[in-house]
Picture 1 (cartoon, rainbow, N blue to C red):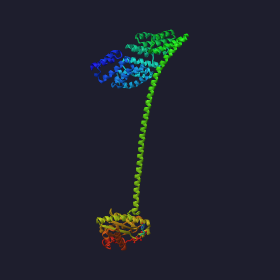
Picture 2: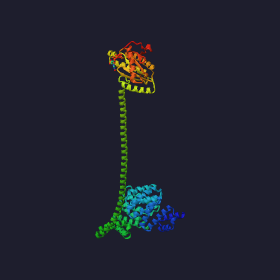
Picture 3: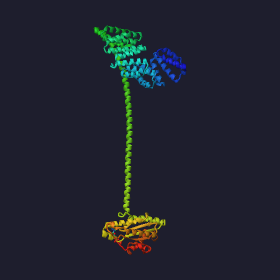
Length: 566
Ligand SMILES: Nc1nc2c(ncn2[C@@H]2O[C@H](COP(=O)(O)OP(=O)(O)OP(=O)(O)O)[C@@H](O)[C@H]2O)c(=O)[nH]1
């Protein structure tokens, strides 16, 4: 396992510098012995090796497979990074932008190490390639804030200065370029150092400081040539042409333009070629060599169109990606709107439910109140129907109903029932002498007096006019006579002066008993009435019991001596 790990690491380290060595190392590995993660790394390195062999399409397919399926976030990042670089070189901006979107997500999951920084630097290059210079500057700042690696710093500064320069930003001065050049020189990053000098030359040209540009470019041209970095040399020469032209040194411009066309005419250097043709066209034109000028001009236009097409392709791809993104956003917004509409609907439903509940509650309350009111009314009506309005005791009708029910019960349970009727004495005189209101008052007071004497389950009723009856369940006759006597005394004791007039108020009583009347109300009434008649007849203000046909005075002589009729 150690051997396999070492071999894989070696292959990884040499994948760009020694592709052949990498392939040999990979071929030496027994795939069956690989752990799943080693297998993913192996697949990435194989794809990379295929790329280095020049089989780009095959490499793209395999790298995409690794990027899509790899569980290791590091290997996924490496595959995506390689794909970004391939697509950028192929100017396949649509796929490049897709990869960038995936890569952005991958970056957030990477540990902050060298790999993460490398991926960020690739992204930075990509932003410059598609001329998203503000994004590039922002990302560069981010990387510069966290990296301590001077190589990363040098590389990032080169790309950031390029972006600033392209934006023609006032935020940078030539000192920024000098600092970056010094940093790269210190760690011997020759290519990047030279790249920065080309940017500085552009900076000078932009500011029309052609002399400075020419000197800088000439100072470093030999370095570029020594590096055998042809594209860089071609770019140097291209900028020299522009600077000489600007400085009205057409001969030198022409010399370098021809140098480009003769020695660096590959497709790879089409930009310096474009500059060369444009310069030669202008120079020929100034000399009056219009035919040559037109030929150069046509070639210039062809390359310019190519440059334009490439720039436009990048822009279109970017706009398309932005459009898709904004469509995605629109879709999301619509989904959000739908969700919020659903939420609003649910809330409205809840509100409706609450409203319904409220209405139901109100209706219920109204119904309950109505039932309550109805009962109250019913109660009141019943009370009105059952009671005597003046005295508040049962009226004749209700008294009869209650008395009969009580009698039936007492008969069933074989209890004694006594019955008392009484009638106010000379009541007509009270009305006649003192008026009906005083008569009413007297009726009320007499009722009160009797009620105080009676027990809770005795039934008292006004039979009409000034005649009253009392049914006394579970009451022996003697007891009833006793009660009647107390009632008589109470009525006689009423202080009539409270009415504003002083007069005698008495009543005559008649008492009957169930064993005289078979628990029959009419019979009880008749017996008691008969006794009452006897009371009246014998002078009033006395109690008579039916059976005896004798005044109670015999039994209770003292209480009956009352010869003071009202
Ligand atoms: N103030 C008042 N008087 C009533 C009421 N009901 C009946 N009366 C009166 O009661 C009187 C009854 O008179 P009578 O039947 O002659 O009897 P009395 O005067 O009491 O004489 P005796 O019963 O024989 O003692 C009448 O004048 C009725 O108008 C009432 O509700 N209020």
